[in-house]
Length: 80
Image (cartoon, rainbow, N blue to C red):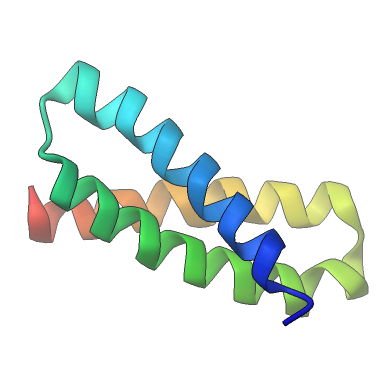
């Protein structure tokens, strides 16, 4: 229960950014954006819980960026 609020905030921000980038610029449907956002948020949140305490904030943020790029690219090939 302690991670629910953080997860929902991360989900809202991720879907919001994906909507701006994919929805407005590339005309991707909101359903695809929502699916990509949920999958990406789950992967990033689990990564944050495991990596962040061990390596610190800067390396974890860099890992999130790399994970988001490759996840969006891979999931995008499937859905878009």
